[in-house]
Length: 139
Image (cartoon, rainbow, N blue to C red; front, side, top):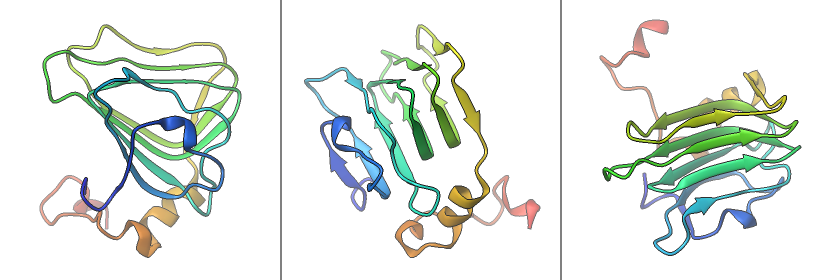
């Protein structure tokens, strides 16, 4: 998936016209800090943040999935603040992180259109249910 994703070294370039799978890993910057509206309900973003902090302190909306993981032992933080929202899902696998924080009136909202697009649009077809996984019993 990493090889087929759009590799980015700055999260500042993500916008409302962004869609598809993005992979952020940057050895010199420590934080992925997008701002503004990102993606849309018909063109969501899957943002993978590898071994970096994630900080979305915006009053805007992110459509799609944020997946933050830290394969190293350092553990990274995931922070949300402001009055914005993520319309989709947040997944974090940072067991050694100092904290996962939601402040303000930030909202995490399930968006049926955005999540449905992820399962039907060919731009996301590299991701699929695996037979025998925890999701296949829902069908």
